[in-house]
Length: 287
Length: 164
Figure 1 (cartoon, helix red, strand yellow):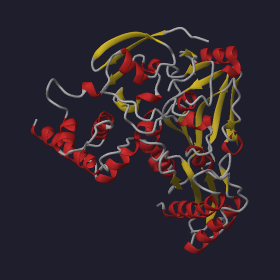
Figure 2 (tube, chains in turn brown, orange):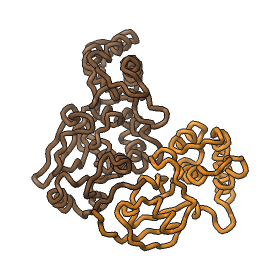
Figure 3 (tube, each protein chain N blue to C red):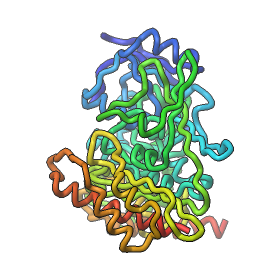
Figure 4 (tube, rainbow over the protein chains, first blue to last red):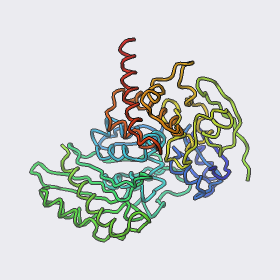
């Protein structure tokens, strides 16, 4: 299978890339690792006239700590995220997420920025990044703006990213130690994509009470879904097995999952509860 | 609309190769059709099966999901670059010794992924081997002997390392 014919540019700087995006408008697509875009182009689901490959633009890759924020360059691969000591230590739920994306070869090429910008409703990272209250740095020739995950994912394959903007970095607030973050995934057995998944980020005070909770579901809507009833049921409570089970039982409240040929709505609703419970329990068990 | 061919320079199995390629040419087709290196197979063509796995700058990647122009400046190793003369790479030898193949179609990709795994983790347990092979599908063997072969190769490579 070949993608339809397109023009290819590999600019050496962001300024040059912005010029290409301005010139070609919506006919252009930005290429990072290509592991969302190229399969879609081979299937002719998308046919950009021009690809703007960021591989020669420096400064878009790598992981660094900036005060109380972890900053991940958009071109950082899933393998780099899943193996980075700073991620494993401070955001184990993110390392776990990156380590179950696709397969080893996909993780070696696929990038965090590419996955996020593609916004596949069956992708892993948008779910976890929403639970971690991440924000996305969108850069253009006019400057940069930062958009929180809750606002960034707009609909199926649709984000707040404008055609003239490039997602350059992901900023994640570092949680206090121990970082109670987790990810639990029911993968489609053939494709590895999410059928249903859940990410949890919990804060617990010295007395053992949960002071803040974010529980997010994947695979049940066009965007990551905040399970706000489950979050409310955890907040202020001691995280006993009964409290966690009762909170997870509310995870499917208000969801309207789309059925597909593999999983019908009732099954997804049921799995939302099961995987929310697993994610909450795994996050609570971090020490 | 046709787009002009672009020049690329790629090192393949240690040999510098220069070519002009259409932007949409996939790396796997560049290797197979432009260079005649047909050991890299096309299986599913949808980034699932791993038959097209090669190493790009030391990392196992699916060459059906990479443009040849993205490999400009890269160092690519295919299955043809694994043996040294008539001496098979330990992973190749392992697949022979442990009957890690039947029809052989998936084998080049399996060998490339396994070799990458053993470079990053010389002592993988069975779970690590299975996790690493998630992107390589085999329709014949049931995987048991493939996992055995990789374990065997790991032992051989550690032994060689210890005795050298």
